[in-house]
Length: 438
Image 1 (cartoon, rainbow, N blue to C red):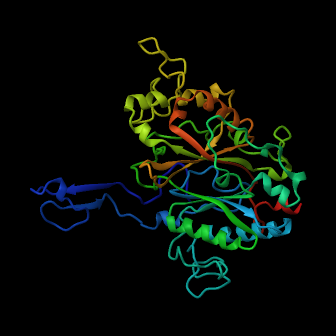
Image 2 (image 1 turned 90 degrees about the horizontal axis):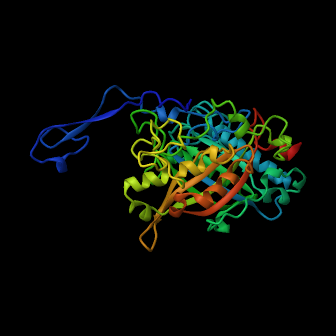
Image 3 (image 1 turned 180 degrees about the horizontal axis):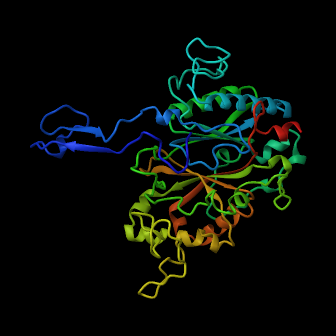
């Protein structure tokens, strides 16, 4: 089972042993045979190549998977809109189909049914997908830490006659001065987050859900992202974003005393945030497509980049001193009498201490959608923030960033959405059942 604190078992560090030769560095060939100018990749110990593939995250539970665990190597964020005429009953049937399919794909064993298997139990030891979904894309692969998380947009409730169950916390996000949002890539009736450590497994899950939605819901928008692959570093590390910065150091941790209070709706719902009982154990996801103006950023010196962020680029340590995990000292003054962390530094403006204690769990993917006609990369961050109440989490922090964050000059918010993500489901249940049936 995939864990947050340890690298996948069996993955070891690689080292290159290069032989001496006149060909020099340009002549090195990794994995080649013996001879001058040839290097071969060797491992310190035998490696089980199926460790990444066999890792799995249970689908069933009090909370949906894909919120607390580390973001996987590949991600798809997809919004669906119900087709005209699709009602509450049709939506319930869709969520059941989706839940049953994900339950199958995330169980230990083979991800796909074997060729010719149409129903019942696959040779991999678990229920097979319906034959209409079984396209064999991920044939031979294991679950690869696959998670699929489902959420409801504000418009879903009006289209299914459920406005009486609309959470107050699902109020539209306010406009922010730095927004340049594309409505066609924002919001949606239903939201799905797919994550896996294998690209084919993630794509297969996407295709299965899209096929299962036919005649009930169509894709409104889709965004594809990625992160570092498990085992790519010598030991588990906080990831880096496309600006090269270590990103996520100050994320709330499940070991924090107030973690559940900040991230999840309590049992019975929350009157303060307007979260009804069907949201117990759930959370609210703010999704933002944030384009990074990388060419402008890269023209800055490393020292200037560090001042904008408030952390060293090399190791993520705050400019107030210490290591990556050392608490940021916002009052620290340097030898020149100036604040060690600049007044508009990102870590200062985003810190809970600067926002009345507001905090959210960030679980993002990077994205790159090619090079534009102007030669600049369409790349950045698929930002996903989880919180028990967006009005106490994302909104106050984003307002502060919008007005005083030095990093904002290098970012463009191009799409946005807010989704109510209910708690998980048990055996035989489906996600959202308490909303759609009770």
